Length: 239
Image (cartoon, rainbow, N blue to C red; front, side):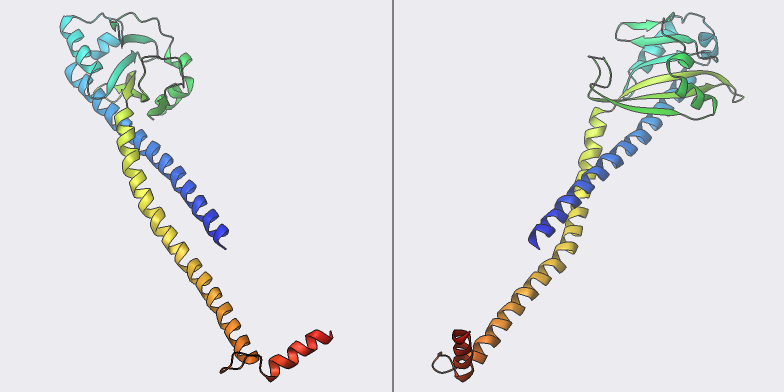
């Protein structure tokens, strides 16, 4: 009984933990996508001649300032820009802005992301330390690939943005873990209450059975065996 209850509680705790991890990652994906969309909107607003840069024109001093701020906007760590066929046009990293990047084409480097982009879908990947060789990477970060469109809605390129999600991940996990613990506590209470009630009922039933047996075989006044108790004891001795 108690072992079954304990196993049920452990299973419930493991289930809640798995649910919290899944919910945290789903929430992080949505947050990273919204952040990257805001980043793209900022870049296109501040750089109306972005199509020329995607086509290969080197950025001037003012555009480099815009890109510098874009590379540190919000949770952004670095970004890569590609032209309409997925060839790299601009890139930023710890060394600065590179207007002649040597990165492979997006269609070759991330073919699945390129296919989704052509289908009008964004691509979000949550990565952790150890997923790839990147010693400067934060504990948790997101890589988001989004289309860049002109005023008519035509695809003119793509952006791949890396966002630091470590603090956001910890905050979301903490909130969801507390909520999950509360739900698990309520579920455990709902599960334990009937189980403990059944245990108490069985214990009381055994006590009542023992009390009825004593009353049937012992004298109330002396506490010694009565006639029925004597006969049962004698029959047991003969057997």
